[in-house]
Length: 312
Image (cartoon, rainbow, N blue to C red; front, side, top):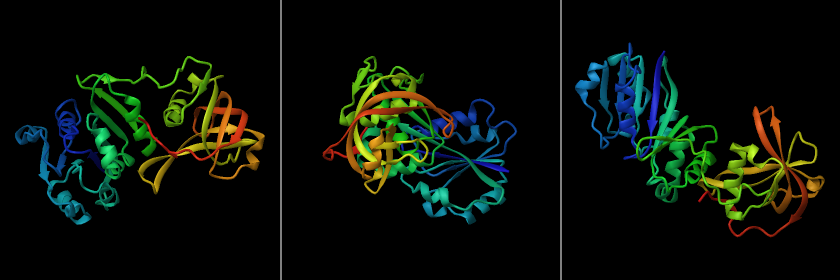
């Protein structure tokens, strides 16, 4: 079986450097017949002689229409690789590649994405649909060139709203790896009572999902929509808001499980404010601890001025 690795990301995101380091450092190519398909020329040029010394064939693809079964079959017959790496053009449609039929013994095993943290805010603001294409399919996403003043929660939460299961690595501008454990939150995590501001809703829910133990036995006030009743928990319901992942027609729910006996009287998408005590409970379905908000006070409120979740 020939393994295929797809590398996505915009120009100047560090794709070429990442791929070159992968190929020439360590034992990634040891005993392998590798085919590298490059769909755009980045700032870092590949050294063809060096690649050949690692038994790597280099092929440039300059037309998106060449991403098809027939062309891949030609490459298979010509080079007979045991592994294939594709450096995908940042402006091409990633969905096209994901939907492309592959030769019978080729299998896509991993999608890896690099993002320049310095330009991420600009891309997420002006080309959100393209960012979505890169992030939604990825297994591993690397943010690079992060400076110490940058809010890593903004990076993480925008990506997790698109693809909650991908692994994220944070690389500082000096090349070191940051764990993001000491990220400063916009509310006082040491307080026993938290009134979460509307624009901090997404940050709170994402942090509670990642670090539920931080919120055990804290009293919290939240405002959001009644999404619907929980199918398992008695008097349980989901309260949340939508995060825009691509466009207004493509959103992802961010929220929390709550419990209150008045939930049966609520209407889906009705705006509510809840105050209650958080308990951390192990959830067998997700195989991890989760926060559940035991609501003491619940009231219907007018819709928020900005109904979508943001992470800035």
